[in-house]
Length: 289
Ligand code: SAM
Image (cartoon, rainbow, N blue to C red):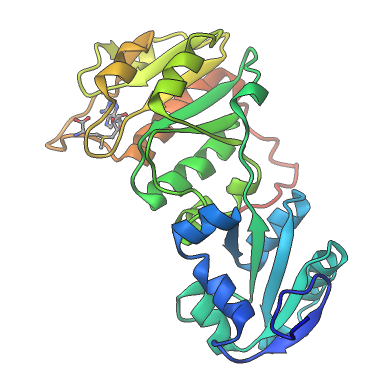
């Protein structure tokens, strides 16, 4: 075996961007390579920790040589190594090249993607699933996954040709919620077929929606919330598949709300009765920015 191959459980120092292991990691910025390998990059100690805590299969963890003394980093590297990952002690230049940004985070990991199969989705009372029609913007998708996590949704479904939730930009925007939120994907035809068995209300949002979103009783659920594409809104077929088409009334001159913002407004309304104020004395875990 060459010294340049990925070796499970092996620890090595790499300072050259031309190293084949680093080239493989960099190639994961391309969707084609992510699709072929089923792998993706998670950047930053928090995200790598979240992924390991959620038992996501890990292949490589690269960390900054300058931060090698950091106790949290050492514990993350030890955990990843025990799970068979290759550990790379990298120069700042190498980490910058992998993550394609200046001032890189101190750790980056390569993990296997996880998708929930449609047969595994078992909607139950009180649940909310959020379905997105051809979402284009990775920042929107990541923000919606983070919001879905915050509101206590049961999963996010991506319908049709969409941006990739496992791109670096989308993963960053999830702030780690990617590792807690089931993700499913379907073509529009598959979704329309699957929707027939949805046991609760299917709520779409539309700028021509006839129903004020605040006037609907979303209990007992499960609710399937369907949000439209950033440019075109929902396709006619998807709009027709909804039990209700809701509008968020607006004032001012804006034509519409941003997709992630409107998803947040809808999701928190649907889950209103399920969300209680936290006990101020109880410590909150994992608070992000
Ligand atoms: N030009 C698009 C259209 O005509 O639908 C605008 C799409 S908007 C940027 C993206 C999605 O956000 C919409 O399809 C809808 O799901 C949701 N949305 C945005 N503003 C909304 C509002 N005021 N009421 C209901 N849904 C809204």
